[in-house]
Length: 143
Image (tube, rainbow, N blue to C red; front, side):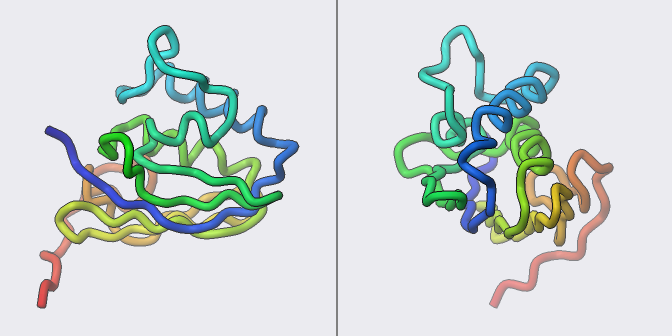
């Protein structure tokens, strides 16, 4: 059960900000439902360690983090996934992450100077902005 996703993209987030970004994500997760539980979750000291709970796999390349789908886990969306992308925003200089849902829905998080903007409708909750109200989206145009 759940909504499967495949994220991809690349963000400029300084390696020196990784610890602060993780702390911001964990703080945001305390008030959101999802898969991460600090008392039972594995190592969680870097963004790469906790990305699985945001339905992603993260690889660091210097001051860049690269997103891919999580082959090892169960990459399902949750409020904690949304919170992850919102909480890292103040630490991101630039970049884009695309999320593709199991039904073909696609939305993007674009980052610039510590801000996040969503393009497209989140296929999981129907919102057009992070934690926004659901909207009636037109049906997907599948060939």
